[in-house]
Figure (cartoon, rainbow, N blue to C red):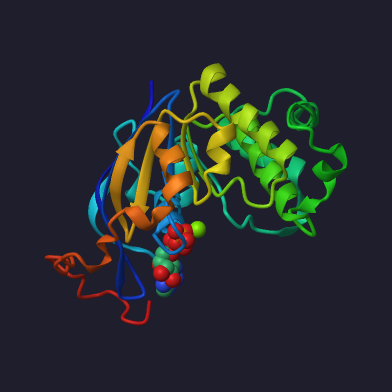
Length: 263
Ligand code: ADP
Ligand code: MG
């Protein structure tokens, strides 16, 4: 049983506090949806958990099975069992999906079998054309193809916790069904815990979520069951208080005197 625990997380980007106190616990087998309008801090949350540089954590903690993720570089977070499906997957000219996954599996100590075969089997599960497997990673792929690529990587790497940032964007209905089925299968086959970030309810019509959180102005303003997504479908985000005008966090108690002011 694994557990991603986010507690009192406050994050500053470009001098502005974007996440203003996030508390969230995702356990093995659970699907949590985080829904929020544009600019509410969804991608910031996913980037901070995964370890993208450029974010200043001013308070709080993020742990995976008790391991302090915030103290680790991104690759070690992945090694600890975290996976991020990016909203805008990075293009990597010169490296194919199979090559990238082979290196990742070697790092996990799981590259004993035929990697190409393993990847091809995953591609089949989500209806992804095999010709993409040997092309440069994400280069010249459509938005939807990139999202299937991310899903395929998740299936091969078998993380403990996956953060899916707008996995639905660019996917047509059939692809949305296929990737949702794959994510759900992982929750039961390998006990994957999921944080599914989206601003549309359409993902949640395909991907059954146990818990739905509403993010506004960098705070979780509502948490409920799947019915919360249905309600959002009807009312939009307008009914949820925008806490952007709420109290601003105090500056960190002990600012780093050696910090680069231009960083
Ligand atoms: P969402 O994914 O919910 O649409 P984001 O997390 O991408 O929102 O962004 C939240 C807010 O943080 C936005 O107002 C955005 O402009 C701001 N922001 C994000 N990244 C940066 C950055 N690198 N520098 C300055 N502001 C940023
Ligand atoms: Mg985003």
